[in-house]
Length: 427
Length: 213
Ligand SMILES: [Zn+2]
Image 1 (tube, chains in turn red, green):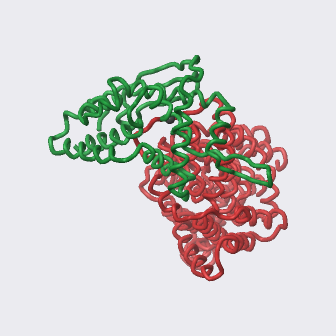
Image 2 (image 1 turned 90 degrees about the vertical axis):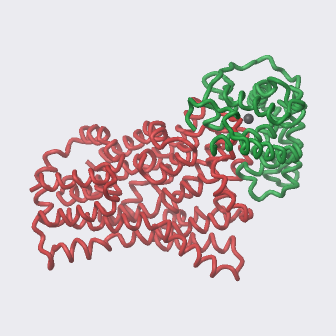
């Protein structure tokens, strides 16, 4: 029976890889199919309709709201010029030293990323940041990679991700925060290394081009924006300080960020209109991740049905390394399986596998957190099928594969660091 | 447009060629500094700047470039000739690694020469001047790239402030200004009658015309 489930998962990966089905739909189908083959009843306790579809679809509700508020704040930061002012200041201060500009954009991407999540952050930091880096001589692939590595450096502090891991792995937020604090140094060190090494290795590049600079059209819209005041630029720090420093819950921390960005930039009589407009706009941005979180909830409920756990337990036990060193080596080697919507992608089938590992009692939940959070650092940057990577590459005028090749060595090291920390502290 | 096809204006029909001539005549009406303003306006971080400010920066940077003529030209960079420039919309490129190299895109340069003939712009751009200008342009990048004091002098001249605390002041980098310095240097050192940016804009029109044809 376990084999049948694995074959189903393989088929699911195939459907996603070949783009026959969008990831979210494939995960829902997979969830229902797994529930059916392990003999879950249609209704009642541990059933397809009630447990898997009804309860599963809202299991990630807190994550969905966190993602939505993050997108809301992102919209607000874009509309009020907070994001563009941050990038402009960096170019003004560091402009004739490309490495300084790239490091500055790295920090801005990280900051924005902690609030809005990866894809919106890539766009917000990148729309001005990428052409600004190119204008001061940073080569295109390095420019795209800088945005993505920056987002990854902020990822350990991305509040919606804390919520996601807390819900998915059934761990308190404090535990998630604790591990992320240990993962953060790796993410930062390798992001900074990426900029230092790559700008040194590739040098600067100036082109006498016949084309208007990239992203000309999207910047036309930014034309109406003025400069945001300096204290408004602190907005992305507000949720972080509250959630990390004062240990407040995630959703109120993020709401405080929305309010801060609003009152520092907007006249009182425009507040209602702007708040509502950016909130509605945020639904558009948040739609893809929210759809995915519904699907992940459904898949997770299916793989954690008693029948599924029973079927998968012997299989997973047999192949999961127990010794800490073997754990690190095996999972570090398996890292590429989180790319191209592969089976270890945490925002896909990987969430299901994480659920199996925990419910089968193979690793403590914190170890699974370490594993998945480490993979997330790779997937968020180097996966040539993930939205932020595709966008950053295309906007820079290079291919997502070029960005993957350039960034993978660095994020692989981050994952390795995370796995070592996990093995050393949890196994 | 495929890379192997030769980009030549002979391919254009009569009517399209006339339209290209008209477009370029219109471009020639604009002043040289206006092209500088346009380049700055298209450079990120200048979205909100007043046109007058951009105009001042454009003339300051161009003059700064012209003033560099005769400055140490001892470190001549490596020059590599390539094809495929029309396809990538590139005329020349400067890369600092592994060794400072100027890449010249010969197909774009050839198209430029042909265009100058078609438009009767020889008075402004002598035979072979475009190639020389491209080399000079990238030479200016090399000059700026290797000289901190020169870059500081440029910032001082532009006079844009990033931060001011009482008497203490940090001058700001003006994105795109180095590009205008390079064009100013190229025009002055190679004795061009008009800004290289006018020919660049005309070339962009020509490439568009060829793509539509
Ligand atoms: Zn240039």
